[in-house]
Length: 86
Image (cartoon, rainbow, N blue to C red; front, side, top):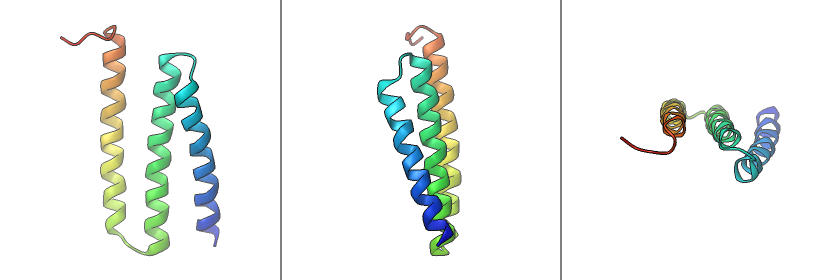
């Protein structure tokens, strides 16, 4: 029961992060919100894996974490380059 309540509050926090992602005043705020959404998605997948007792979902959450980290890093480099690709 505690896991379900935690997942509910985490989904609510993700909703606020999505609002920040859409309405962020600067590009860096949007990038930070994207990072928050990525981290909260990983947490939701991990909590669901524990709740359903499916350890394969933990591998999926780990893969999502790696992809999220690479995405944020590449977006930050792109923004620092002024939005130009080489």
